[in-house]
Amino acid sequence: MQTPLTAPSRSGSTRLTGLAVAIAVPLLVALAWWALGRPAALPPPPLAPGEKIACLSYAPYEGTQSPFQAGLVIPPDQIDRQFEALSISTGCLRTYSVGQGLDKAPEMARKHGLKLLMGIWLGRNRADNAAEIKRAIELGKEYPDVIRAIVVGNEVLLRRDLPVEELAAAIAEVRDNAGVPVTYADVWEFWERNVPLADGIDFVTVHILPYWEDDPVGIDHAKEHVADIRRHVGTLFPGREIVIGETGWPSAGRMREDALPSPSNQARYFSDIIALSKENGWDYNLIEAKDQPWKRALEGTVGGHWGIFDDALGLKFAWGEPLLDRPFWLWQGLLGVLVATGMLVMGRRALSTEPLRLGFVAVVAGVALPWWLVEMPLVSLDAWDWAFAFATLGVTLILMVAVPLALSRDLRWPRLAVVLGGDRSGPPGLLAAMLGWMLLATVLLLSAGLLAMLLDPRYRDFPVAAFAVPVAAFLAVPAGVALTRPERVLAPLIAAVAIGVAIREGVENWQALLFAAEGVLLALALRPWRGVRA
Image 1 (tube, helix red, strand yellow):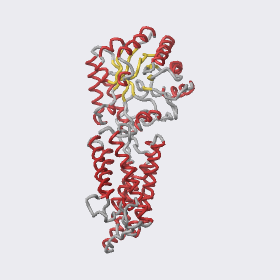
Image 2: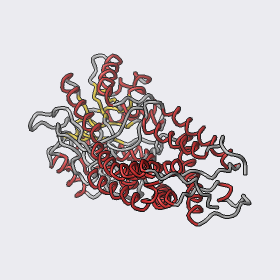
Image 3: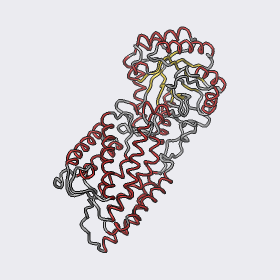
Image 4: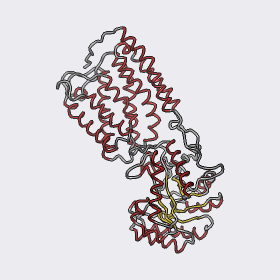
């Protein structure tokens, strides 16, 4: 059913507004991308000319490689190539296992003049643990000039993989036989709960990760947080050597409260921590040397973006130099202007009847579509992620055509009962039916996204750009007058879940607030309190 809008008076004022919108929309889109593309200033370089980072966490995996890949053995030449590149930036690497070919790391480290904090991976498989311990002891005896210390287990207590007594026995076995210093590494809270464990090690290795704290710490206070925790750990182990074994910041991924991953925040964090450590004479190890795509399977987008280098060993930033958080902003901006202008051309008749509605959707599309196109491969890990991403992209592209045409023809979108065939007023026309089906798709997809963020949010991204155009479209194009039961039921539920997401994530998380706002605005577009039941 194509319900005509009340024909507006096409006054000279309306035509003038349409002309202003036609000029302003491309300019607004261009201005938005110019603002998004401005480089962020970084602190002064924390390293003197020729000075290197104290130590970097290292994992050798590239592309689709992962520690979960059965039978994988990293080729020695891959480790050799990576060590050669990393030796330019650091004199020390921390490894996490001696399996999967990493027992060749000491040999390669010696070749490139590197020291190692060599890790033993301890998990729930006792046979694997025994093999790691045996090989690490052999390497400790063979490469005492390379291995600064052996890290016997990484966050074993945090993961609850072994009881503390069994962990202590493993540490003692390595310490008694390897001939090099030993340590154990865990987050500061678990050191706080297991102070006696330090009696069996040569120094304490503590992890301090502001982004991953139970109460996340934003970048503006991250440096102070690390300083406070490091000093607190010093009071737990007075007179003992303490190494900050992991500290870092992600360059991409979802916000946690006000902790925002971004390239500039990552570079700022590394600069701050190096400067802080030098000022206080603290030993430190940054996580990590290079991005690890396989970690996305465990921790979402954010897990794969902790490296100073990317997966191809390209340096992400230069110390002290301004940095772009959106390196493709110029091309995104050009595409956005073309998209917005194209929508104005398709809906040129609406410029004389509904210029503000059309201009609103065009501006949103000019910003959101290029944003989502770049974000899609970043946040899509498996087939379900890609299906979700392409589904939202498809809805967006269809609505970018349908909305200008609908506004030009004074059409309303049909209520959900009409779309689903439960209304006896007759089928809508093709364009109205298209709007109706896109509304149904938006309701289903956005509801699924909101529920996922409410029930299982820790490693999920906020797909704000994916839903910006659909929500704007159904705010701009008026609804059919008759209210039907689906709107009465769905709108308050969507709004309630959206508000729940905002409450759970906190008011400091603007990504969460924007995503929740999309849910509330879609509920407003459905307007369950207006109209009469069909």
